[in-house]
Length: 248
Image (cartoon, rainbow, N blue to C red; front, top):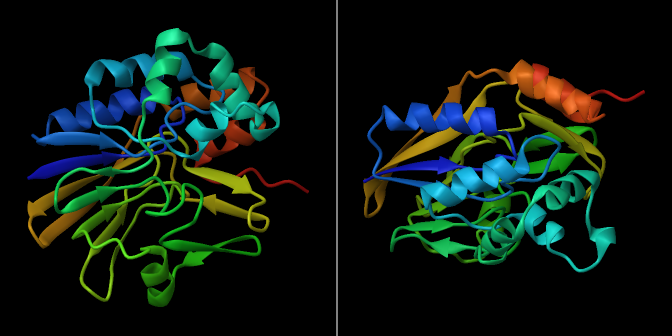
């Protein structure tokens, strides 16, 4: 079985279209989406309609939860922008997204970790940046999930790790945003240093799985211009360069 893993599209329709075409040429059996699909200053409504038309299994990320919160204080500007663009059908689609999904007996989907939509899984924030998670950290963050494959997103960093029990934990990276900065749980930046769209292809069955982490070029400068038009230099720089905007 060949499964394409997408995550963290963030309304970047051009990146999503490029990844979809790349997937089409590789003969996968299934495409799944791991959440944070719309939040950002790009094309949230068109991206939602694209995903709705595909029928791909999708789950909610932390930004879907924040967008749908009854408390506007939970929404950062990217969430508020996306929410204002959506119509009734797109909002209903968001409300119906599950938090996690057991795709098969072997494959479990979550946005961040099996028990949280914001906990970093395969990376750990440190002052100013991140470091690869230790094996003990990974084991703790599995929260007892026994599946042969656990697919996650959230950190935007493509990575594949084996647990002590030989489980494969995969983060395909971000389709739509290659770098960002955050203040939780401490100020740090996340960056790939590459503006390409990211996704992964899982292949296997039972307890035997392999993964390819893939980078797809697209017209990233067009998306950087769109972010800049919306007054979002903090998005324009990552989209153009793959590096987070430095603030002094």
